[in-house]
Image (spheres, helix red, strand yellow):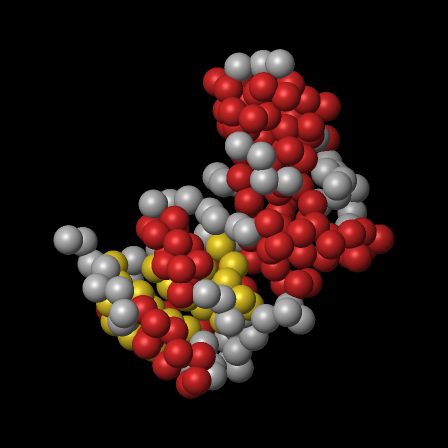
Length: 217
């Protein structure tokens, strides 16, 4: 059996201990370290080589977004799942745009925690419908401050429709049936969208498109 190493980065001891207790109920996961902030976590990441990082957004010294930026500079491919609360919606789009593999509310269920980690290990991004709705709502509230899209990242009408369907949670097969095209064509359009936006996942594409004002919901 493969055991996945988890690093927890959060400035609240009760959150770290709670997550650790939950993860220890599943023999597939091993908590290899805990850090109170990004500055403390970075050397631990180099030393421990975790398979997944569970990271808070708001932390003293170095927050989650700053830490993700530093990891990106270092060329790290370790998946990061953001730990969030109900009052941090404005940061969610930025986190997704930087490649977060998912968002978890700190009071999430045991099953949802395991599901998100398993998805991240596979290189996939898992976002629940309520989280995606919050991302879209946050974007709508920021609308006036977003600059218009540039020509290089302009999506075609069909690409926009496909990305809007993705944002609503529809799978490629359903989108293909609804648009009267093949599933392979949908995937080809998604690849083109990824290339235009400089991303590599569906949720990242949605986040970047909303952040840049390229797509409206």
